[in-house]
Image 1 (cartoon, rainbow, N blue to C red):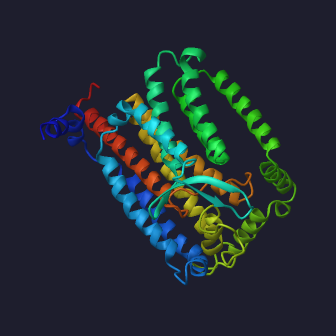
Image 2 (cartoon, helix red, strand yellow):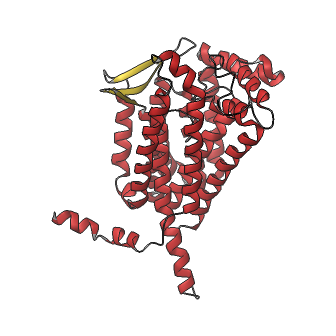
Length: 396
C-alpha cells in the first residue's frame, strides 16, 4: 500500500494532475473514425457473416463493438498514464513485443490460409480469443527507438556508435515479420524507423543509403518469392492499364467507380456480396467509396489528414524530446498505414495486407491504435501545460 501511495505522489504523476487537459480535437477525430468503422464493418460484413456463422449477420459487428469499447477504455487509461514510464521501461516493452512475435511459431500460434492458398502464422490463440502480436510489436518498437534516440542524442550523427544498435533491433523485428510472413508490416516498420532517425537528428546521407539498401533487399525478396513476384508484376501491369492488374484491385476500382459522387447508400454495396475479397478488412475503403461515394471517401481522408496534423502539432510543441519523438512515431505509423491501405484500394500501390486504422475490422489493430492515441493524448497534456506557462510568464 505504501508503494502505491508513493507512486501516486511521485513528481511525474503529480505533474499530470496539474495539466490543463487532453487534446479534445484529436479525441474527436479518433471517435469519428471509430464510429465510421463500426458502421462500415457492419455494412460490409453482414452478408459474409450470415453465410459463414450460421445466419449470424452481426458476428463481425459484435467483435468490432467489443474491441471499440475495450479500445476506448484503453485509450482513456493511456491518456492518464504518464508517458515517462514508457521511456523507463522501453527495453522491457521491446523484449515482451519480440517474445509475442516469437510465440506465433509455438503451439499457441494460429495459422490462417488466405484466398490465394498461402498460409500465414500471424495470430496467437488463447482460449476463444485471438490477436496479432505484431500490432503490439509495432508500438513496442517505436517506444524503444524513441528511447534509443533520446539516449544516443549526442552520438546519433555517427553510424557505428549511434545508428547501428537501433538498426540491429529493427533487423530482428524485420526478420520475425518476414518469417510469418508479414512483408507489409515489415516494410511499414522500416519506414517509420527511418522517419524517426531523420527527426531524431541522424544525418541525411546514411538514411538515404539505408533506404536504397532496403529497397534493394525488398526487390531481391520479391524476386525469390513467386507469390510476391506475381503481385509485383500485377502492380506493374496495372500502372499501364488500371483494370489489367490483380483481381482484387480490379474489383476495388469497379467498386469505387460504381459509387460515383454520392454513393449508392449504406448497405447497398454490390461488390461486398462475395465479389471483393476481404471487404471488411483490407478493402473496406472500396466499400466506403461505393456506398458513401467520392464525398464519403474524401471525408475519411480529411479525417486522417486532420488527425496526422494534430499529431504533428503535439509533437512540435511538447518540450520533452522523448515525448516529441514518440508523438511523431505514433502519428507516422497511423498515417503510413492509412496511406498504404487507401493507395492499394485505389490501385496506386502494390497490394499489401495493411488494414485501415480505426475503420477496418480487427480487434488487435483497433485496440492498439486507440491505445496509441491515448498515449498521444497524454503527451498533449504537456503541450497544454506549456501554453499555460507562457501566458503566465511573458518573459519566457
